[in-house]
Structure formats: structure tokens, C-alpha cells
Image (tube, rainbow, N blue to C red):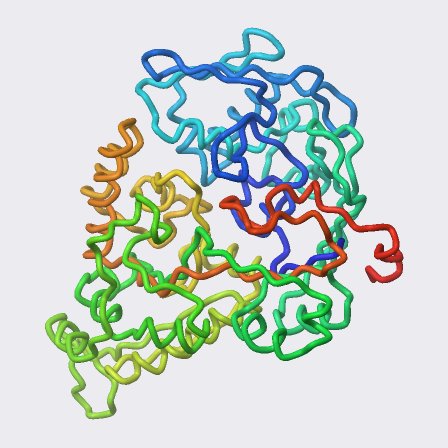
Length: 507
């Protein structure tokens, strides 16, 4: 099966990379203690069972018997302990470290038992252990996870192992005979690196790839209008657990001024973007949670499009057009800044143009730069060298967003790269992590979302739909799509022998 993606992983150690490109590959190579089933309930993956103490502070995991790495070596509780230690090591600088640093003690009473104890009950604990991809101690002990060759030559335990990685071209995974969960049906997965979405679509039309994520125009207009494509492809649509946003660098002036952030929020017509860029396949949101879930505060309303209010706020913040050129100034400096986003993502690039036009109307001069993903992350995000970004957050199922919004999460490589610092948000995030009552926890996150909306450190642009095309030769896909998404149980997908590709067609 041949698929495509626009960005190449920076590393195949996901707990270091923290990016979707890495996750899409490593999810086929590594396992976690727990996983979510198709209905989004937790079940064991490496763990056969788990027990929670009466005080809710200790979790004891029992691993399945006879687990093995792809190289045949035993996979034991020592590997889980090693992975936990590596992630919380400050030198690793994992963006996920805060989830695991709350563990007061981790121990391995025997090869199949891994036990963790917290100082106080931690509500997202089980969810966190569903996200920790376990790494092999025997191959990584004593190594720097940022520079190790393992990051390009990983050895895992899941359905596939790395076959070949041609930089800038493709990553090939082959079926792992030692998979701890049994064999996958499809023998080989090839992921081609094609940064431009239009180029991906040309390859899909030419039958050179089997699946890709679609933009709304291709999903709603192009494929339905072409009988030969409709005959060949199945289309899938699901409301994703993600959103697109405009994020301010709060350490750069004038974005440290809430009046300026709110003004820009009022100046952007989000519905125009949803209709013009996403052809209506998006939802205007007011909180950083999936619409319709209990965590999304139903009382919050998105900032309406109101350029008059935007201008009034900017005037209040000291911005005036002193020379009549249409651009506002403060302290003799024109209000101008750069929006950066990742190239190849046409929706984000088009969104930037809509925003640029609307901000010009209220006197702000905006330039746009699209940058290749790896450079975008290393040169701008990790260094904090940007004014404004257009990006997206893919969220977990637990409502905890400590990693993204807490003021302690601002080191290079961590997720609070916009520099957000609000003591009341910090307190709410800390409370939410330790509150086990779901209703009380919901109220905490509703308050958190309300403060965030008022503070406007980001402009929510839309929650979008996942739109996917998959060739009909790929069979065994669950339909209708389960809550866990179209890719759930992909190890059970299969290709009938008469429909299989020849090796040469992957080139």
C-alpha cells in the first residue's frame, strides 16, 4: 500500500519529535502499554491488564507474556522503565515530559510488572500511558535521543519495521514477523514524501498512490465530477480532533498587548475562511476542544467579524495613521509583521492570504512566508524567531492541555512556543490534572477555555474535517467510520491478490 504525506519526519523517536509526520510512521513501528479501541475506550496493548490502587495514586501494569522486539530480543518492563526515564530526562527535552514527571516512583518488581506511583491522583494518567511509545533499552541505553542513529534506523515491536528510508523520497515499512500483536495483513507500506498537495493528487489520479488526505475542493468538487476517480476511490469524512489557529509570539511587541490580539481576532472573518478555503467543511470554534464533546464549553461564542471594534481597540492601544498611507503607526513605527506557515499546506497558505487582506483593511501591513516543515520547526518554532504563525493542533482524547498552555512549557522543543503565561490558566490546568470527578473536571476546563478566549493568545480559525481518499483495492476498512477514525485497525486491511501492485510501481 502506497500513501503520501507532505512533511518528512525529523526523527522516528516520536517522544522527541512531537510532530504528526513522525507519529504517522512510528505508530506502525512502536507500541504503548495501552491503546484506544474503536469506541475510544482504553484497552491493553503491551499490557495484559492494569490495576489502580484505592487511593488512585498507584497503577500496576502487567505485560503480556513473551513480548519481543523486531530483532528477537525480549521486551520487558525494563524497557518501559527505560523509556519513562528517557522522556523525563531534562537533556531529552521531550515536549511530553510534564505528563510523566509527575510520577514519584517507577519500579519493575519483575520482567512483566511495571508500577508507577504519583504524589497525588493524576486524572490523565492512563491516557498518558496510551501515548508513550516504548523504546528498546538494549539499543538506546546511554545514547542521546536527539543524535542517535536509532532515530533513522528504529527497531520497534509493532506490526511493521523500517525497511528503507530514502531521504526526501519515501519511507518503506515491512511486515514485522515478531509483532507483539500478531501479523498485519498488508506486507509492505510505502509512504512517499510529496510536499505539495497538488502533486500528491496528480499521483493519486495516475494510480501511483493508494491514499491521501484531501483538501475540500478535491473532496467536494474534483473527485465527484470525475467518473473514473469515483469508480476507483472511496471517500471518507470525519470531524477530526484538531483545529487550525493563528498564533502570536507573545514575547514580541505588540502582541504582548491583549487589545492588539483581540483587535486582530475581530478583524478576521473566520466564516469567510471556512467558506472560501474549506468550502464550508469546517466549524467556527471558541475553545480548544472538539466541538460536541463535554470538554467544549457550549456557552462560549467565537469572536465575531467586527472591523470597527478592531479599529477602536487598536486606537486604544496607541495605533494611529499619522501620515495617511493607510498603515497604522505607534511610536513612529508602522504596524507590520510576518505570518509564517509550512509550505505544501495550501489551506494554511490560502488562509494567510484571507487574513492579510482583512488586516490591510484595518491598517496592518502583513507579509506571508511559507517554509519547508523541518526548517520551519528548527529555525523558527524551536528558536521562537517568529511574529505570527498559522498552524494546527492535533489533540489527544484527554482534555489536559498542560503541555500547550502552561507557562512552564516554554523551553526549546516544548509546545508552548508562543510564550503564553497566565497564572490563572496555570492554576486551572494544574487543578484539571488532579481532579478525578468528570463533572468537576469539565467545569475546570470550561473555565480554562473561557479565560483563554478572553486572553486571545491565538485566533481560532476553524475545526476541520478529516477528508481521505483510499483506493478501492484496499479492503477491510471499517465503514461507517468508528469514533477512533478511518485508520483504526489498519493492520486488518488487505489487498486481494489480483489487485496487488508490482514492486516497480512504487518508484
